[in-house]
Image 1: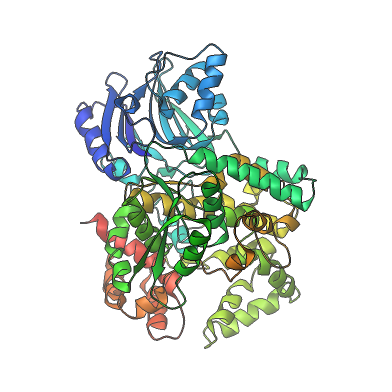
Image 2: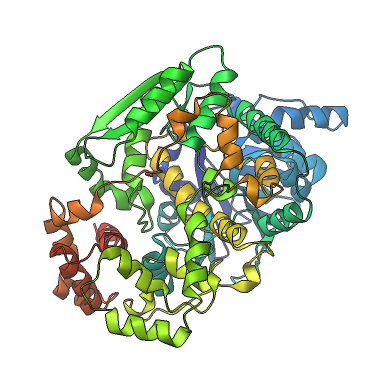
Length: 629
């Protein structure tokens, strides 16, 4: 795992390449503390910076930026290619392998680019990555990102200089950076708690979407470089549903187990200590069970516990760990431990991010780093196998809601909007005015229903959630919800949260359930092998029950949460009040103060739980303050 940054300048402003590239690298040393390097071609105006977290091939032969053996290409690469030794064998059989200098996956990639070209190489990979590739012969820069978006990549133009890198802070270190806050993105943050690709918090700075690459030539500007998909989740979904798995339930479970086992085996490749996060839930327990099955030593597992009643799952993780025989470490944290992370969040996430489970994720990553450099996680299981609660209840609730005329529903909302109704009824009120089931689901998943009314100068922009042209064709409402969450929530929230929280401690996180071969098989499974008798993840559970007793797992899903509502009324109250001060809001000019103050007063008085809505505002305010430090 690593980090990189770079730029391509058309002006003469950047003659001191080493100094500028060094500054860009210094901002992301947490992503790669083991080595750093820079490369530039002054006549072409391009430079690359890289920081290295050594995982495979710890020798200098793995240092970057790295040149291909033919000297045509140079790359800065972040990630892991799990099948890179198999790719080497293919090159050798084909008679096009170079004389290998080491055994890093970066060297393998460069040899594949030389032999097969860009797109064929990307499609042959099994792994997670973002990369910048300079083609000396064509004077062509390619930026590319892995299929599901495990690794980040930002890019955009400032003052005729193309900036790119693993995190926004690398771009900001360049003297040409002058981007302003994108108010449409701020509204997206309020709605979704994160900013979905291709948007970022800055105007003109984009996230490269998962499964995409973009190629830039000298003289191209923002309108000419169009990202292109080399792997499209929509195609995978439509192909899977059109060619469903036709075997028995038992055969489906065995086929799924085989694919996850294959993925886990590939992702256990490392020349450094390796372990796994274990929450005791279905997803992480499945990953750990299949790791332990393939390991001659106890797998190192890590769980975090809270002393707060109702927020602790550590005891379940401990039971699973004892059953599987892992070398288990758990850390119980108090309120103060968690609160102490909050001042660091704007620096860790480098654009505002408001999924509050970022706090326990950071704490468990920090703990794991004391023993290992790589940790496998169970992320992706909910989106692929129907685990989230709305997949079970949303279709039923929508069937009831749609029976009422839309006009009557809108009238009910107008009458009850400010009435003292319980939180659960208030949540139902939010979704009543939905015209169709897709709008109903967006309302259900939106923390703010009309955030552009709270953000000054913001409008509504297209996202995977609200744009029918971006939707795959699906066979049922449940599959549609899973598809949309895979395209947006999973990559822009879940994977962002884990990547930044882990990399802040220089820990590489890996996600075996997001091996594209597992994803492609999951979309071949019919819905009854995902959701059955009101319970999600049926096939994945059946894989797990071959290794762990059913009764150890079957319990209500809690999620990785913190008592945010109580904290905002208690130990965080003064901090929040300072950030939400009416005079301050008006001076800064991003938010309309009235709706923010209304929510805050309702929450403080205990009249309504507005914690999730407020957290997105607070995370922006804390981030904004951090920019001025």
